[in-house]
Length: 209
Length: 209
Image 1: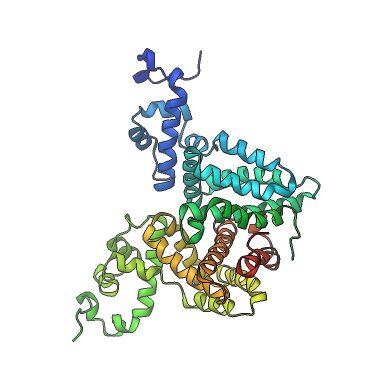
Image 2: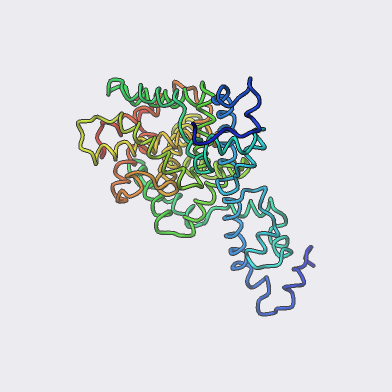
């Protein structure tokens, strides 16, 4: 016996039951929730407003995500395609890793609308919500950390990953969110060629030149 | 004869007339306005709500800033101390300019509460308001542009300034707004030593390594 039943509103519709459609409906709810957390903020977002915009019963959101905090947690789980690409970039030969990480960022923002929408919402939400920020920062840092050689001591590895993050975040915000200046329209191969050496130095180059 | 009179509410108070106190009152209004634009957004900010929070007559805000667009314009004028420091950094010998620009950013965020409050509000406002972003990006780019050698052709100068901005913006957001990872607590001299070489390469080093 499950601890909680699906809301009665949905129980009767056999061919659209929450079990079958869970993936599709949950993703629609999460998409609305991400946009709302980003634009309205966490405090102004309610299960009711998300339910209305997603055209589902509020009880279904409670059933899927428990409460608003659970909804935020789920909204901040990065898409698998993004984390898979990041892991692949972090596993390339160390000498090429700067370029692979920059390319990975570009592909996710430019060729993968789901990842791009996730990044945009996550960055805007993080600006205001400390809980969102901590979740995202921890997640991102773990992946970048994997790109730093394991043969370096822990403090320096963490610092190098953090330095690489400053450039990755700055590139994403200026090119994709602010879309300001020549960096916004620079061909992607030029972005990789100019930014990769910075990431590469942070990963395994001399920290003080 | 001035085109517009101060609101009658204030006209009678001789020792606190808007003429004498204009600087102080305007600054109080702008501080409230900046916080509101950053936290509530441009659309949700009203002259009335700013007036209430600043404890002044709404007519005084109209008198000083004309309308909401004028209030945003005024709120986004960077503090003189910041632009003066940036201009000074851009005028140092080219070989030291990367370090001076990073130091300038650190001093403004850590030693100058007025500039820090301005930066924070401007970055948060820019995330949502294209008009704010364009104003800020143009302003910032002009100053960074001055740090790039005038002997380089215009397209490359603009690109180099834009690249430097990606790292400056990424540093500011991760260290001061997100306060995430080791970069948030790294001693300022270490920040300068590790980040300056990146800015320096963007200013006058080889763009493709």
